[in-house]
Length: 77
Image 1 (tube, rainbow, N blue to C red):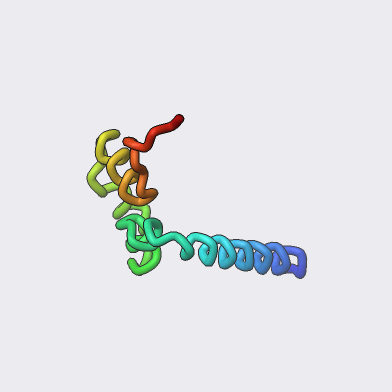
Image 2: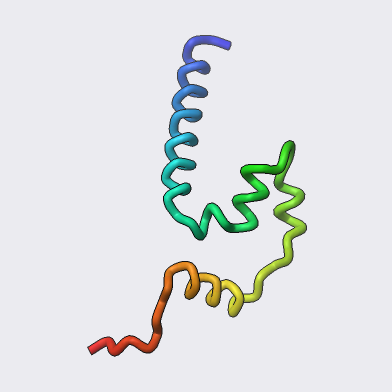
């Protein structure tokens, strides 16, 4: 592996580390099943993520309402 590839890999490693640190600021990401699988499961995680129960749109909407504490009854005027 040449110096050029090593520099590229180090830059990617640094950017991935920064991305994960930014994600860690959000509880709804850290507590999600997807993140737990990614962060803690050894080996390949793609198959496990593919086998997860697919969420219906209403389930996703309710999750966003909880995570972002959306109150749809607020008067917009």
